[in-house]
Amino acid sequence: MKISTNNSNFKNRLISLPLFLLMLYATVSTAQIKDYSELISKKADMIEQKVIDWRHDIHQNPELGNREFRTAALIAKHLESLGIEVQTEVGVTGVVGILKGDKPGPVVALRADMDALPVEEKNDLPFASKVKTTYNGNETYVMHACGHDGHVAILMGVAEILTGMKSELRGTVKFIFQPAEEGAPKGEEGGAYLMTKEGVLENPKVDVIFGLHMDALTEVGQITYKPAGIMASVNDMKITVKGIPAHGSSPWSGIDPIVISAQIINNLQTIVSRNVTLTDNAAVVTIGAINGGNRSNIIPEQVEMLGTIRTLTDEDETFVLKRIREIVEHTAKAGGATATVEMPYSMRFPVTFNDEELTEMMLPTLEKSAGKENVTLISAITGAEDFSYFAQKVPGLYFFVGAATKGADLKTVGDHHTPQFFMDDSSFKTGVKTMCNLVFDYMELKSQ
Image (cartoon, rainbow, N blue to C red; front, side, top):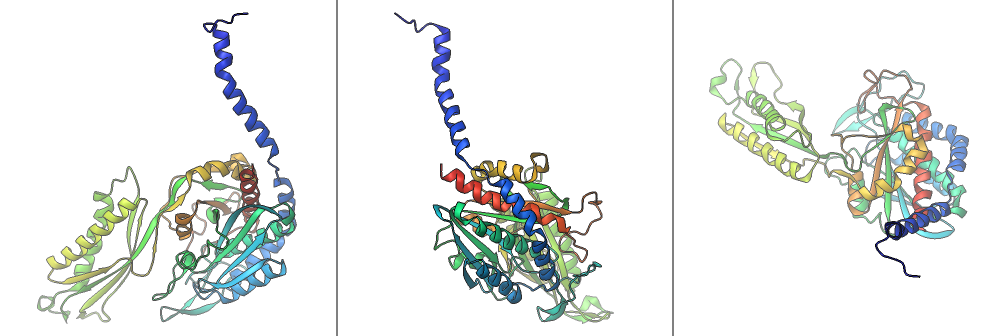
């Protein structure tokens, strides 16, 4: 029987056949991917109180960057008790655990940062920090004011769950407990930069890395994410303005570096308001400290300022740094003074970039971990993270987990890096479940 190729029904069937086969393959492939989320959820329920207790203990005993000795010892002891291969003193005080599953597959890294901040806690909590130490030569209180204590506790819980499911793991998990995310002390290397420099992503070679951050301004049970650039690059800076000292009663006999510093601060604000294309990307130039003089009637010789710069693209970073130098140097010269700019002064993090293909692939995992209605796409933020150094080397996915008490007024809750920073104890279970699910789902998908 002759079949006419002009027959439209035949054409439709012919065209749809490849699509049908593709859909059939996808259905079969999906069916072969084992879902461990229900079991993981039950295990997360079982160890929730342990995670909370770990977090309380770490919160009550905070340590600054590259000084996380007690925290590292706590982590190492726990990992060793699980039978995980442990490496210590990685990147100064970092701890790395390696868990080899019973089945072959990719190497998945999970990262948690460990360091606290030089902040005095002002929360009325039974486990509030009262710790004091020395920072930059000055005595200071110490507080986990950014949630790193929760990150550590979550990853300790994830390690316990995954060890108990080792027979089902299709690959290897590398647990990276990282020091000095907030920056190493002046004159020291540290953080993700140093860990990558020392080869933390090698032996075994990491294929992909996942990281999370607790978010005190988002409700418990929520997850927020963004493909591509999710957090800004950061450079810190030190500006030194030198004038000519004089008696405060006769300022014309000298060159006042305080007045010139005030002009520099004002002029720097024009970079964001007049030079950066804000409809494309945000940027921040902030002076956070200014020091000069010690008496009301003495014009000092020198003023020092410290600041931070945030940008969302490499191009904007290059441009903003250039404009800062121009403005500082020329403003000082116009006033008869001299000025130098050190950028970066002690730290630089690149843009935190989420691999777009990986983000799309793992979005269903985020949605099943928290519920699709609780997962939200956000715009990039001007906070910064040195997770970016890991994500420069291997595909990475970084996301936020809500930590604010349900129903709380998000306009008045304690923000990150403040004495009132607060996380609800019920928030950590979402992080534990999500990290476990990411490991299993990634490994299952890559085994197809």
